Length: 242
Image (cartoon, rainbow, N blue to C red; front, side, top):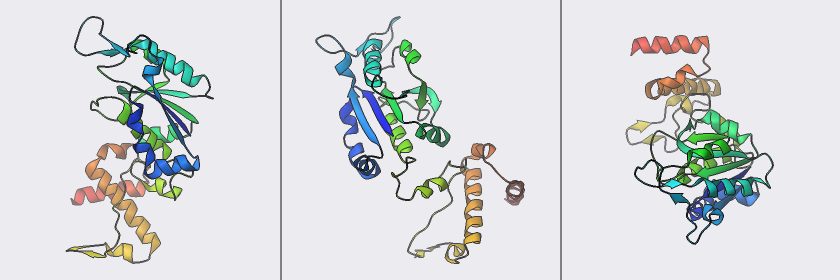
C-alpha cells in the first residue's frame, strides 16, 4: 500500500511515521508514505498557497493552481491513484470505508488548511472524507488517521492479522470487554467464564457483551449489524428485563 500526502507541512508526518506499527510496516516494505510539500508547486517569490476569498469573509482560501499541479505531478507516475480530499464536508470515515480503501494500491491524500480550499479542486479528486463532526487546524491530522486505520489492514502490518477481525465496528458492533492479568484487581475480578477454558462459552459471552455494549453506547450501529433471529430475541428480552 502506498500513501502520498499533499500538504504545506510535510514535517507533520515525520514523527508519527517513525514509530510503532507504521514504522515497522515501512521498514518491511508493507507500506510506503511520502509527504509532498505543496509549496514546491506554488509560484512567485513567496510560494503562496492561499489567497483572500471572493465575496469577502474571514481567513484565507487555498489556491487551486498549486493543488492541481501537485495532484498532476504526483499522480502521473502512479498506477491507479485514488485521490482523497480531507474535509469536514466529506463522507464520514467508518471501518467499512477503511476496509474499502485498504483494497486499493495507492491513496493520495490532500490536506486542506486555512478557511478551506477553492471549490474547483473538488472536481479533481475521487472523494472527500471526514474523520468526524468537528474542525481541525488542517487535514494533516485527518490524513494520519486514514493512514493508520488503512495500514492496519494491509497484510504484514499487524502481527496477528486475525485480531483486526474482532475489533470495534468490524461487524457494526463495539468490541467486547477485554481483560488480562492480574485475575483480581482491587475489588474487580475477571469474569469467571474467561477463566473456564470453555471456548464456546467464551465466544458466546463475548458476542453477547458486544451486543450489550453496542446497545448501551451506540444503538445506531445495531441497525447495520448482522444479527441472528436468536440474538435479536435475546436483546429484546434483556431490554425488557432492564
